[in-house]
Image 1: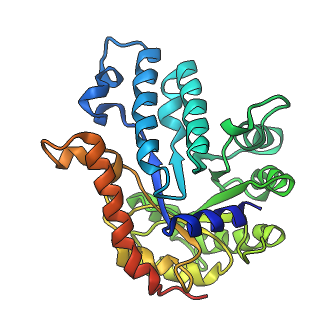
Image 2: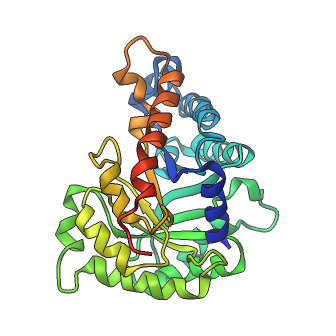
Length: 302
């Protein structure tokens, strides 16, 4: 199951760090200037994005268990972006990384099934190395929007991360409302959905996205979902630190991945004179080091 593969990957690399591959065109290093050149075609921009992310994957390989490409930045580039997505996913797998597709899809019936097939299972003859190991999904349409993804997970070694409590400032508008709150009700559903997909490691292949910028709520949701692997955005550029994300872990530092995107990818912007790839490598190594001590003393329950 995906949960077992994830556990093995974290154990192999010795850390729970997740590199978000969010190629903001305007932030790419000068070496990839075509990405933000208004005169460049979408194919030229996609080529620059691909070259950049392949270099990032080279940095991540062997250091972290997984990467998380954000589909919107590829969709922006049209057909060339779709090819770039497949190239990046294939390269990440070739480098020994798990790939979590940050796609946040949500729909009902056959449309949800098409999304699940597109990103996780593929049509007959699809290249399996170009498919994701897990994806993020939006549960607002209810269980029928999640079931097609659960069906794919049950057939293969795939996983999901359901949006439960996100790190954006506007999330309170809906997620914090009610008693129990919307986030708490979704968390309870995640536990139900995940029960048939618990691996040998004791964790489920159905995970939850919970922002690390709200450590109090993170701790409560961690206790509410004891077998659920968490994906924790908000570290680094959004303000959460190692002490904040520690609330999302079970005893022994198990049960979560900590995502950082801009702070790693574009670290060169805060390091004048340092080659961009060196700055990215140093930022990632600093993240790994910073998370080690707090996670070894997790405040989560397990």
